[in-house]
Length: 415
Image (tube, rainbow, N blue to C red; front, top):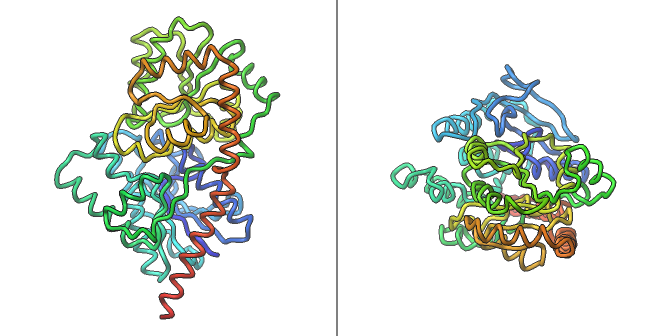
């Protein structure tokens, strides 16, 4: 099978889509598939193009057997609608400059969000006479409206129509949460074309290693403390001020330390609030290389998984939840809906309503004071991740989806 992935985000950037794409493409190559990726110059989330890529317009490199074509990008931090829009548009447009360099391919898969890359992928698939598969990490336009990033009006309506058009015209739409299935059905997407592939985790890389845990804890100065870790984007969607408020309520809890690792549009706001409250139990860390993250997650004691309280996040599965589960860490979850059903239902963590800091603090206090509870929840999460949410299983499922789509497309052309 010859696969072309068009994506706004890819290795060596850090973040959920980047990691997921890098891992399934590597697995596909190991299985004998030919995989090409077209993406922009790495710049997420800082909005600064990484060293070694600056000044480039069109370049090609190899990583884990995957051919990566990189095209010019208007880099912008994850803040401000206008600049982010320019970033998305520039990448979607410049992707076409790599097309003459591509080897033949049997299927095009694009990541959504952002919306415009999906339009480029759909158009390229039509041009080459191959099927297009939309990997809808979340229904971004609806999320953006509920977060207030897109104001209700003509522009929001136009974006909704555009996203629905891509969803309806794709040979298959992959969703990561079951709640998206009904949402797409109401938008007119045929149920037979919607495929549920939940978020996953590399259960080999994210596996507990006691010696590494102690080594990393010593290096970070975490010995003798109970570490509650958040890692990832510091953006509007995550609502990290609820974590800061929980930390304020737990300022006198002996040995409990909150570590917020990452970057994003809201980081300055979060840091300012920590300073304003004078919180000595909160540590802010800059993003760390991808290769270090498994060790850092292993070194923590509690996994923090918060989101804002909006309806669309009830059909969202945060990837970091699965990383904490795979590493046998109890999850302090402040996300309702599908995520709660998996985490709480599987006995992998404690749930509190999103943006309810007092309830979040209560759960964190309970976890901090009860090592046996942490161990029991962590063990259940590890077992669940290995059984149902491994990256190998995701690759198996994606391989079946793409094989089926290619076969169905061939039958359609033959008839």
